Length: 313
Image 1 (tube, helix red, strand yellow):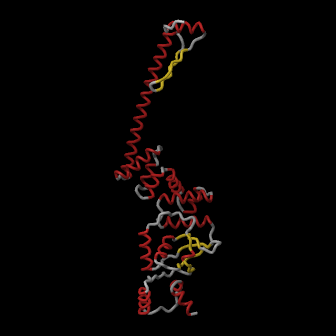
Image 2 (cartoon, rainbow, N blue to C red):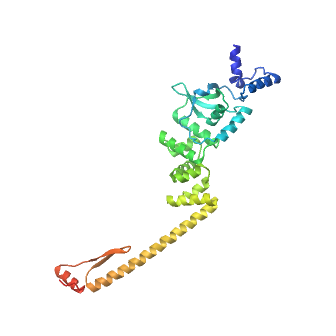
Image 3 (tube, one colour):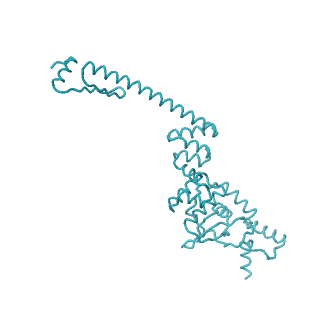
């Protein structure tokens, strides 16, 4: 019985310690000194209610985890915080058929605890469906601002693909406006290079919104690179896009005007040639090449046209 109390005192006992006589300051200091002397770190868990204490080796990554980038420095800082102030919020897991526990929320906290060398971690175990697991993971990361915009967009897309959810149903479940969900999904239509810029924080969502106003992927990439190279803010990016559009419109206008002049010249040549040959004439011109089509009624008319052209039979 005493052994059990000692075990709980290092884990769940810290959570359910209400009404339990606390050790004296001298005893706590002695315990801490002994742990430090053995090369272990003292980890305290703040009171948070009743949860299960689970071996870290029995916890596996969540298959619907939307976050793909974990910064080692951030994990180290979180580990230091947990070592100093305790694990303020247990991780959320669900048990699978093999007896392991799949992480639903709190992977950064889990990684930090493993970095500290903890053999057990306090977790809240829930029995949830796949769709609920996916949504809980996405919500937790979004609320903690841990996801970059591309991870969030891919998480939303996975919800639609894996569970056949509409944008409306996703927005309702996440408590977000439908327009926000739609705008996030639009990011996935951008070239992969630009998606990489967004993931790394090289361009903001404001920049991305301006870029999405351009239809040509090549021009989108040109503007994205210019944002990074020149350090353009969103307003400057809008100006750059407007200049690009104006230049494109002038080029199209110039091309259209040149084409109009060319058509007028060809039409005039057709009329003059037709008048000279007294026959229907069509000139097809493309670049520097083309062909002239002369119409005739019969062999006699053909002979007449050839004679006019100076061709003798």
